Length: 121
Figure (cartoon, rainbow, N blue to C red):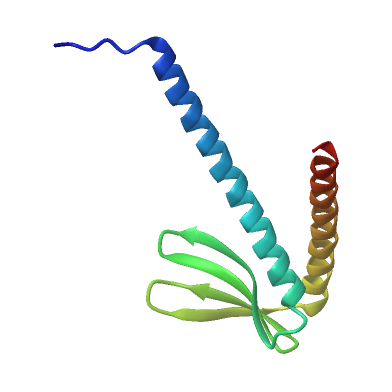
């Protein structure tokens, strides 16, 4: 016996899948934003902090690490870490100030959006 499934069923199935995907993408963005803000906010209070990381290839990445008052560029491979250079503190401090400013703007816009949705209900 062959059962015929209506087109409406597939449309609802696809719509539910898209809604779940959008929710996951939104949560991923929120988590990344909050984690970035936590790292930037805590950089001044910690002795050792990883400020920024980026993947260069499948087994290699670069990290900007704050150790005390020094900023180091560290290369990470599959089996080792290597200090590549020491970064100028004024450049990194300027970047941190810019990141804190942009994070403050993001927080303000997120707070405004939450306030808007609270008032709507």
